[in-house]
Length: 117
Length: 113
Image 1 (cartoon, chains in turn blue, purple):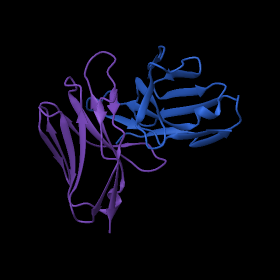
Image 2 (image 1 turned 135 degrees about the vertical axis):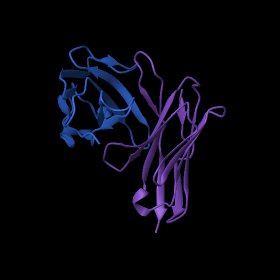
Image 3 (image 1 turned 60 degrees about the vertical axis):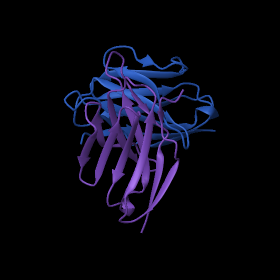
């Protein structure tokens, strides 16, 4: 199947700093990428849908000024957590939709664990 | 409001036996369903899917059954193997503008050797 990478895999930062997470589709061009957040023993919660060359669409309750998403190319989307606070500590996962793939099969990255001290 | 529900948080089965993972949904407009498998600290991997026009889809040891009238689907794993131990997420999709996957909370499957 298609491969999606994320970098970094984990990050520890001080409260107030900003953290950038990269999501790359390695062997296909993804016009649409998704950013999810997962708390322990909880479902994957969609944060935003990222479309190449246009503004991201955020889910209700997600602060777009806090979680900046940029989808500058067909293989790269970035999520920047601005002025991170301890409550932002979570597991962030991206996924990419292969337009040549079957319907809504999304390929997920390995995730990024963020810990804000 | 949880539109996709996986009410059992965990399931433990003996190696070689059948694992049955259940999923219920509330939105009758969902037209495509997927199961993902997830290991700790990793992203989910696609396992199997089913369209709403079907009631069964089989792929090797994995079979997904869909009961539209009951808004229920299940994933059967036969025979279960220790390597199947993971969290399994059920997801549903509604075709249309701004469509997206809606995930359940997941079921932790433990297969005992």
